[in-house]
Image 1 (tube, rainbow, N blue to C red):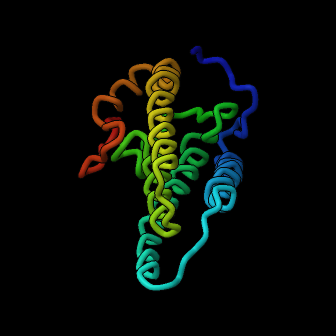
Image 2 (image 1 turned 120 degrees about the vertical axis):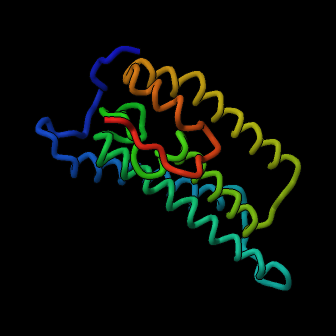
Length: 181
């Protein structure tokens, strides 16, 4: 991938990050709405409140925290990166703030935690759904390895290589990495 300009960019030439952050949040909100509100309905998830099912609501905490992590990452894409998570308007700057100091893919990790929590709340495990989740997780991993990482390496070069050497892909560090200046 080259350093060519994206097809569309939400940034303002003189460095005003608000427009990019607001557009990034709008894109992220649409994405969250799809995954959090629409998909469970399409999959036929129903909330059960009888008996032991009431304990499932404890899973709301990791679910909310996971989606909050993802939303913060979306904000960081706009504010710091001056872009969005969408490939048509990628960040102009490497995002190494917030949760990105601990793990290279906190948005995916946050979504995974959120979805695991929702899965516990709605309680519909079956072998077909489990196989689907495994396939999606494998697809995300392959997308990261074969598209995102080479694209970031091509766009940010040595800066990304250094980041990649210090921050793990999926399992967070205990202490955040501070990028040398």
